[in-house]
Length: 466
Image 1 (spheres, helix red, strand yellow):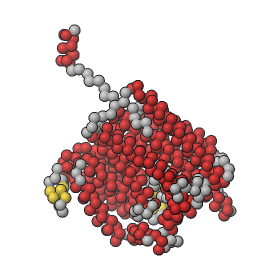
Image 2 (tube, rainbow, N blue to C red; image 1 turned 30 degrees about the vertical axis):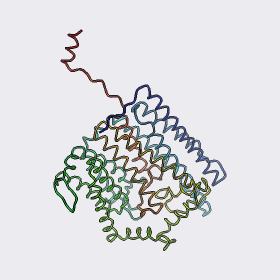
Image 3 (cartoon, rainbow, N blue to C red; image 1 turned 30 degrees about the horizontal axis):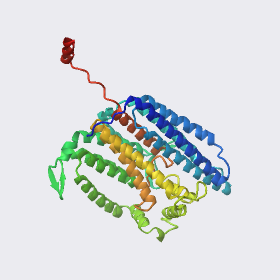
């Protein structure tokens, strides 16, 4: 493990000022985008502009003050980067709300509720939980005590949507809990629990997992009793997700398991084993599930049925092509023609109206956010913090890759949401908790080590010398 990065107290004010400046810049850019979207589509200023700007400013200022008070040594880029992505997501959702309102007005229906306001409400919930994590969790190492509790809680959260009365199916996948008018996707919280379990378990067992006890098909494997809990967790989570037809989250969890094993043990044989299992699992899923076959066919031959099963991806590709390098401009494209443009395909919305340049900016922000997360992992003073920060960063990277790969037809569609950008409370709240955990680990890594108190004998020696 590398030496921890410490920050001199004299630099704390400069870092927090830089954080505040970047937050103000993010709010200013998104405010201009909010106005541009309304002017471009309706040629009028948004009626809720000051409400949205005021609430966002208050929320992110609160988060900044919480970091200043509770985690003063934390990385100053985490909050502004996440806030910018969250705000750009609000702008894109607002843009699509305008199209929904115009469509309803033309059809003589009542104008639907603005999803941007609902997303703003979930942003408030996410910021509240962000602050709560910093208040309650003063030391991230406390989470290591709940290693197996996190596993049980994570698997339980995955099972809950299968229960009658509270579990509900949306678009053919049974992933949601519905209580009255509210719905929530527990898999978003389950991934946090599984990261805590993996980090806590691998800290204790990484030496044993790095030691080969047997060789199977050219792959060195550790003892069964060391590998057993990991296999149980993997089979349980994968089985539940496959049964729920949530193959996107299953792919995310699979990649998380393999990559964290590699980070903990530094054995490339885990990557080889993971590749073999992935190919075998993909082949099995293709022959076992009709919807997987359909997604593969759409991926390989989208224009064979452009108005049927491939309509979504074809419209997405048309939108990206129309956007070109600089985009059509906010409010001047037609991203509403893509089904689920606010959730699964919000990157297609960004690509059409912001162009390739806008997509590159968004992807670079994700890249910097991931880089800061991995840097926090490297600089953490304890092995648990390293694996926890690494796991949280890996989840963000994998999720962005899976989503962008599906939208651009690099890989088959999976149905995941884009972190911070997509409409949906479950994902947004979970991602703000991820940022809070990274802030807490970063603060511990950068905080100056307390002075070493002399032992009793050394103290007596100093007194005698005086």
